[in-house]
Amino acid sequence: MHTTNLYNILDASQALRRDVLLACKIIVQQQLDSGPFGNISIRIPGTQTFWVNPAGLTFEQLDIHDIVCADIDGNLLDGKHTPHPGTFIHREIYRLRSDVDAIVHTHSENTVMMSLLGCTIDPITQLGAAIYNDQGVYHGFTGPVRTSNEGTAIAQALAQKSLVIAKNHGIFTTGTTIQTALWDMIIVDIAAKIHLTAKQLGLSPTEKLPDEDMQKSRIEVRQKQCEFMWHAYLQKMTTGK
Ligand SMILES: [Zn+2]
Image: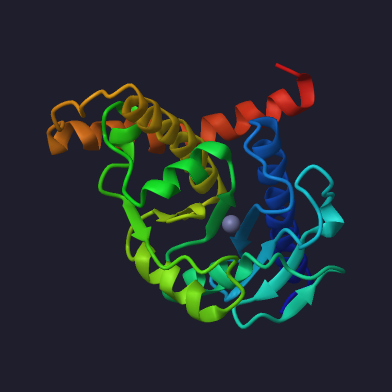
């Protein structure tokens, strides 16, 4: 391989490492972080390896050299820390879904509360409509996931959807890019809060929107905004606005 190509590949890989860090910092900025519990990873395209945050550090504490590279069999390939235990789940999602290149998980209050219900988020607003019919639900909670078997079960509950609600645990969002998976997590957190509040107020679900209107929300709210919002969050990080 020509040296220049090799450098390009290494540079691209390091850019993904940086993007894991940036996604973690955006989760902190949005106040969706959860001490030691969140995990965010990005697959190196076309491989069975990914960059992920490590065990034992909060998102707030991380810097670029703390992000580690692991493979789907659990081997550490680059970095000085142990990969976050959440990789038991990420590894199996990457194994089953070759189209998934990024995964975001955090124990934000709204997503954990939503997970207690063991059901999908109602399409009662634009945000709920944007993720309608794109949510799997996993019911086999046995405490913190420390085996590949439960990781596989959660990946199977995700199936071909973009996100999975793990009952009594929280929500995992996936995407073809970190921007889509991260934006989905931010949307899902708000949609979960709306769903929970509507239930508390005793509101009955509004009439289900026609599929074509749901599809409109998916395009306008999710697909068209994720890149823009990624840059907006980064701008706020550097300029404060
Ligand atoms: Zn978790």
